[in-house]
Length: 250
Ligand SMILES: C[S@@+](CC[C@H](N)C(=O)[O-])C[C@H]1O[C@@H](n2cnc3c(N)ncnc32)[C@H](O)[C@@H]1O
Image (cartoon, rainbow, N blue to C red):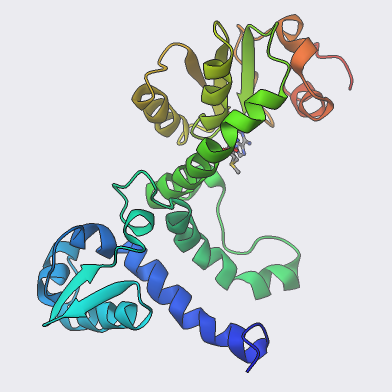
């Protein structure tokens, strides 16, 4: 059977859901380096023992856990990728779990021509926001240095990262150009998360944060057009003209 055909695609859906539920319950992290019974895992997860046992066995069938003498353990192959204390943890998995609910409304979205049943980013709650920003941070850390190397930062003193999320890109830029300062502008519920990433990176003060909706709110007073115009792209100018009086047309 063609694994990429309709039947193969349909069969991958349960496996995806099993993995995402394990991520949401943090089962790989709770098992860590230990060998545990399913009852012990359920106790740690605060989940139902029988249902947890079924889920753990499904993960074994998918080779994402191993089982011996009734004890479950992480596999060496996926440990770093699935355990959230590991530096190699694929934070995008948590965000994919959050996006599952949005994908479920795809039919309604296509019928209506607009996103169905989803509030604005700022109103989706902490359980959605944290994995979302973690996923952006994971990708930003992988790409930040390469992006920073492409930009003409030599004469830059201050940069604005509109919708900067965790600040991963802003942090890569200030690390590349000594003396450069950055302001990460994002929504009110995101900025405390941004601040935490910046503090953890030891860049407090070098990367600062500003709160608002970039579609309607004014930008921070320290960011005058003249201080940034040389490094702003046309796209940024178009967007910022809406909330940045005095910015020239692109
Ligand atoms: C896809 S994420 C990208 C984050 C970051 N630029 C990166 O690449 O890692 C989009 C970011 O824009 C922010 N954002 C979306 N709409 C916004 C708005 N109207 N005003 C301010 N920030 C906004 C989100 O909160 C989120 O942090």
